[in-house]
Image (cartoon, chains in turn cyan, yellow, green, orange):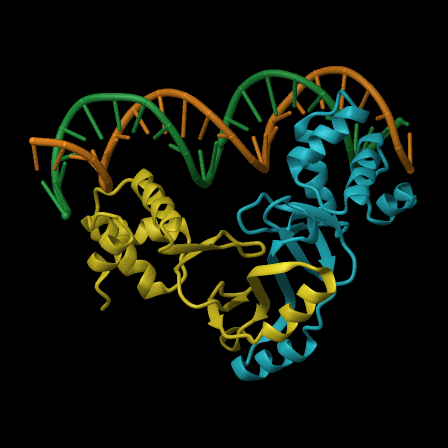
Length: 133
Length: 133
DNA sequence: CTGACTGCAAACGTTTTGCACGGTA
DNA sequence: TACCGTGCAAAACGTTTGCAGTCAG
């Protein structure tokens, strides 16, 4: 298990039990939406309020610890920030899978063609995963 | 100008003046969010209510005439459905540009590698456009 | 010890709904 | 004419805020 206490402190956030629970659950699920996160944190931490979830998700997002992933036809999910990657979304079971897509060549072409400087690539490929076939 | 009356009817929607105004504005802007759409429709159609905008956007989306595009750090925009394409988003001026990206080879690889059937690709490349450099 | 964090309740902005009226086909 | 669509107001929904009390550092 990662040292979330230290991660929080290096991001200028105090390591409260609520925050540790939030991070553990996000780390375990890798991608989770607000509602499921609230349900799961409440199991470990009955007194937590939804407002605390929101305040912390916002603080951690602002401090570059978490990232919101917007999905077509689904609620946004949050994940810990890591190297840039893309996502597979199964429309049947809702699972989100991290994938590595080589976009360098493509973005270079686009930058040249449209005279545009690309700083971020958001890619979601949706369909059916192997379990749901 | 396109024959929006006919387009609406072929999508099982009655061609009301409100809907024609909505479609004309979306067609003209190519991408527009709810608030701007409401502002612009009101200029041509002072009596229109926001509820009507929402009801129609939802009806047209359900009936495959419009499509919601979720953007990072921005409100969703709506566009008329056409061939699959990707989007460039300028973080400075907010402009959205349609681009054609060749994703066939990539998605084929991903499908094989992850045993996943891809039916839709949502790609948003964000950065700075030529006007904002 | 002090500023940051929590939990509650209230407020807020956005989207949806119910209903009476009006317009399209 | 029949049904669908509109506009209004109210309701529902998700998220944010203010505040008093608590806790991490």
